[in-house]
Length: 338
Image (cartoon, one colour):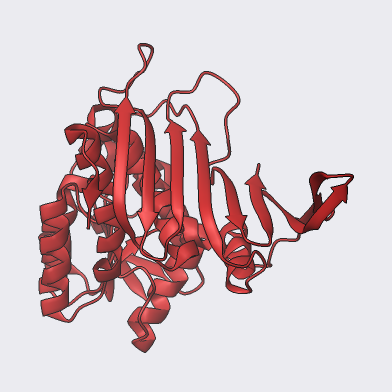
């Protein structure tokens, strides 16, 4: 399957590697507005300069492709995706679906009317860690869940559009963990309360730290705490997780999954103690492809066979509402209900 990639610098550089190692997908052309970036990537990847175009319209007028990969900054996701959808080309779009709630809603509706696939790159669902957690929850290993805690701490020295975003942690990073929560719980939040702040040492313009509480439609409560400017003891990108269930607790720490079950109560002369089973380490499921490699293959399958991927724009709107409801709560100081 031949694709046109729009944006080959920044995250686009990462996608160049993903596509180049795919057995099923190859490039028809590239779009890059920055001439310096184009020259850098020509030298780095030995790209054909004749296949690098300044606009998607120019590329579409010159080459034949089956799909488009949109790796532009969020504010350009909507116009670029619409150009591709109008050309009847399916789109795999980097997250977030768009930079604002209104644009995301409009874009998802546009894709629905067009009947052309618009898929969002929510790659964190597709790690061996996430798939193992989902498997354990689906099997009912913890019984009914009551609460989930998520802790995330990183300090990326980013460059580009993230530095000036108003809520970089929530919009560009927590969006992954929020999407994982929806996936793990098979439910959407109905109440959200958030507080965000920016430490004095932060190199971001917008708030890079946050705590978010949410109640889901299935009754599970969630507490999320994170920072993109931590000064030590970083977590993995997947974050640390704790799932509280009626029959035990499952944790994810440094990408290691552990399970401990409650085995009853012991009466020690009127003093009662909870009895726990051994803390078990859960082996990770085996995956031939993970993260963006998995997403690209799922996109290829959807385009070539007509199957529907999990992270369509229409479904991903629920993740965007989670994100922008948290932003709205942080800015208003109010609980947001849906």
